[in-house]
Length: 118
Length: 112
Image (cartoon, rainbow over all chains, first blue to last red; front, side, top):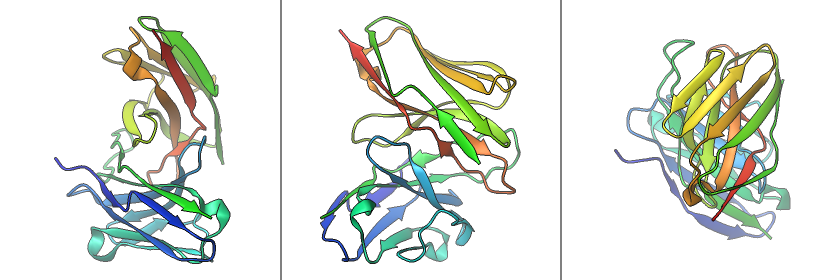
């Protein structure tokens, strides 16, 4: 089974520039997540999609970050304009839809995109 | 809100047993899970506790005590490849959303 695909793997930009990341989740996974992981910290959820609808974007800095999941499959995360503090690894994850409170559907993570903002 | 605390670093020797603790403050959660992340790699799922007690998966075991707001990951027969960061994470009670709130991670170094 193919895993979660992300591209690019690395990106270096200057502050105030724009950047976009792409994610292709595991086939059949209805739920897609974008995380930001700053060096030395745990992943922090930015946005969660269920099919092509947003479930939670409460931690997404909406003045500069945007995300979409057209057709409920691939997703893109954009930063415009980038700041120095956006330097991090951006992880995409997907999971099956939870069907009960006790059934755990693990999240499968992609390799991430390492963003450096200069 | 949720907050999870883990030791930042743990060191052990090959073949030994190591326990990584996780204490948390949360308004309610479905369960506690553990993920492993090698340097430059993706987090991968290790274990999940919905109920109090011990869950065993091969060399790895995880424990949860809701009354003590505490959990741990136990790694037995340590191998060099176990050197990685380990994250505990809760799935908060939040309507239909099933999310993970991660701790800051524990860097495990296994020495020969």
